[in-house]
Image 1 (spheres, rainbow, N blue to C red):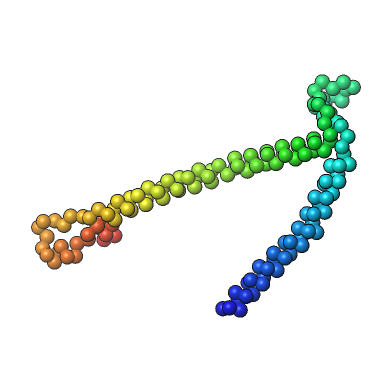
Image 2 (cartoon, rainbow, N blue to C red):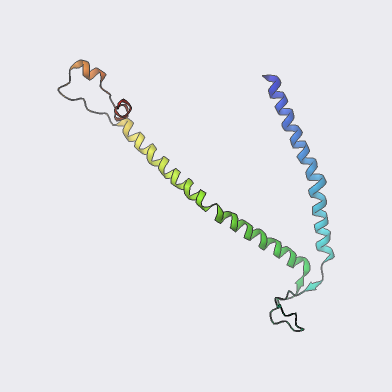
Length: 143
């Protein structure tokens, strides 16, 4: 048994080491390349939403560095993606809340049933009284 535990611990340590090296070899260069790209594109640009490609577009934005527009679009895309994920999970959240309410009601019912003793009929003999269930929960289990 101890050999299996040691083997699984070594396996987890190996996986963590691989993840660390993957981060170093993949993500660090990607972050550096994106940073260099943003620095290289620092000229001022105004975005145009005019589809006719006229000399004086009707709908333009203020001038900002290209890297600012790129970062803004990245954040807008992230926001729309997060909103879409949140909206798509709505039925699951609703079902989880309903299950939580049902669980709370069942626990409350169980606590009231387990604390409420049932009465033994007055006409019962002493042998019947000894075998009679003492709580409502036992009565439910017996039937």
